[in-house]
Image 1: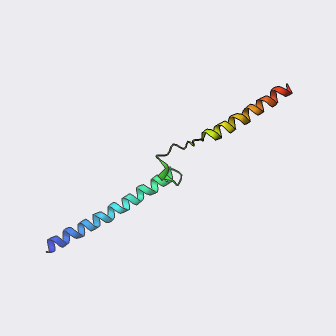
Image 2: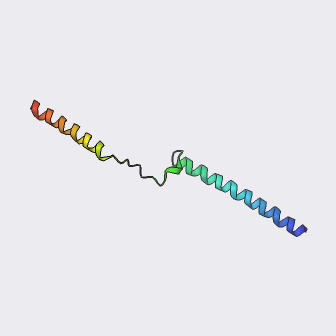
Length: 71
């Protein structure tokens, strides 16, 4: 039984060491990514609906018409 207890103690120590290492890695990732390393997979692009694109296009056409009218 003493041999089994020794093995269990070693395993617990190794688990604790591994947890500390994971915490250090998380801290490094947080520092390198500016505090939010969970967004690694996102591209950061937003998608507009077709209606929103139409509104933007109409507004731009109105701006160009205004400029051309003034010229």
